[in-house]
Length: 137
Image: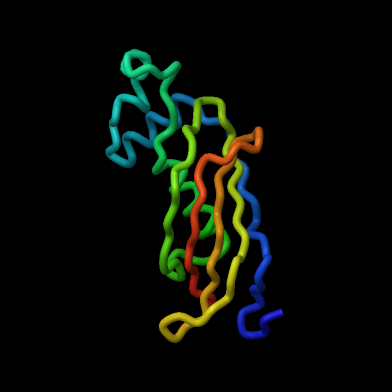
């Protein structure tokens, strides 16, 4: 155990499981974020674009990963947060968000954890992967 931080490589963040994504969630996020791209809220538009239905905003998934991180450590301790959008998150997907400490390091005079984060659906399919740097002091 690292006595300075009580955070160690391999530690898991508390998993966050969310309800299945529905149209109301997408409409509320569109309003809150200002992202009214019709591919996420207009079934006819989505079908004309070759999709079977609307699907979640990538930034909604990133926001949920941010919620995972800030449930673990206060937002003021977040130093960096990057993600890669790997797959579409469809209606009916129930997000499961997880994280793991990859490294404890000193950066700019403070002890930090480099954390891997991921959003999967209820079937275990990875949708978003990323990393964050979180101050531990």
